Figure 1 (cartoon, one colour):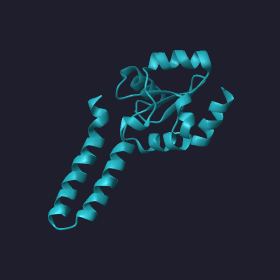
Figure 2 (cartoon, helix red, strand yellow):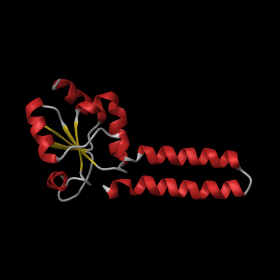
Figure 3 (tube, rainbow, N blue to C red):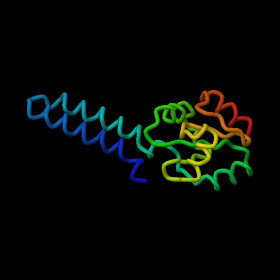
Figure 4 (cartoon, one colour):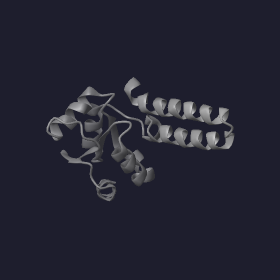
Length: 145
């Protein structure tokens, strides 16, 4: 869990340091704007923007029961964030597995990607798809609803 928050915390710390320097140099407006940008970046890269993660065995069990895809992701991944944003509210219908919190999920991703932890890896009907187009994922989701 700690690893998931490293990037957001670093973004906030760096933003705070630069903003503090701008305040002392007489630019409080620029400092506030910069701090807001860093806070937004930290929020976008935090686990908070993703639906609640479950472990890989539970995600696989649920996927077998309802046919919905399983998305293996990790915080800080720009492609995972792109998928999450492009799916919009539909993202909550998928089963999300954070590979940094679940070793079994990381093992599934490595098995699907020649030993690499390449995410997002979306598993539909038992077949893994690495970094698929969000439109394709939406289509898969609508087939299973």
